Image (cartoon, rainbow, N blue to C red; front, top):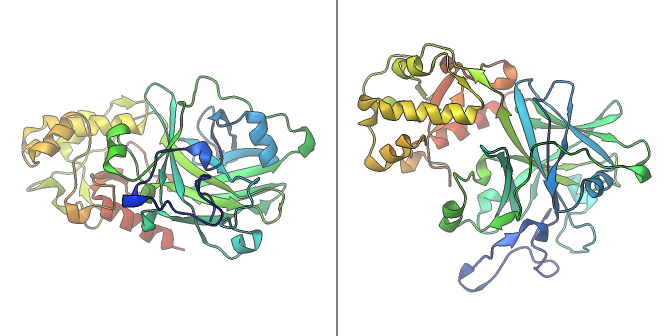
Length: 365
């Protein structure tokens, strides 16, 4: 086990309260945490990750890490990283040993994190308790491999996290603060219930997290850490033509490459500039809502979502756990040069199909 609530006794990893009750916990009850980010878009050579906020101080995190972290990614992606460090002062027998990490490709954890930047510039970090959701409990275990004087963890999708050791670990000064960005206070770990969806705004659930446990076999003094990434696309303008559609537009969203962007929606968006892909996504669904012919294809509850710039629900058989609404997919992946805002590189998929196609992609050599 990587992380568990500190309130549980030695060796116990799950809450066992009457009626299955799971309390709302503070993340600090699972370990020390932090959020790091870059001052601009990441680069292929590495962009230093700076301090946004956390349960302790930047200097405490730097000492725990014994060095600094940086992100390597395609140039138009800005990376935020949620970090969770285990409680190394605990002798709990449930925690993995170094020998066990050496045998793992996936690890068990009772909390998984999501980090995202909000429209006002602040950063929100929250977690979900995984004890009642077996499909949420395991995350990849990635070995940080030596490359020169650095250790590198490949997080997938063209993003790598590098660790550079301090010249003198005893004199680590800290991590510079990322100016103009703050972490919202009181980071919570939510039980997987409907109440969480009422508290959080458009929550994202663990099956879609880009997270992993990183361990450092060549640096045994560094405890394994958990990282959860948020990759935001930089500003850009919309290009592309789209495709003429007939019949029920999203009928094919659960097969192949999904449903194309309709030409008449592309015409409304082409040439517009967006500060982030999140803003583009909202505008896209708003334009769908303004198209009477397309809007008429949706049930009233989905029409209400579209009018607010939110994606519509997928059929129940096409959902992926708690991910229930249609998603926009980049046909040519961004790390391979796919255009972020080109509507001809976008399609709409059901959550189930989107998860399938990314799983198929990860299996490719």
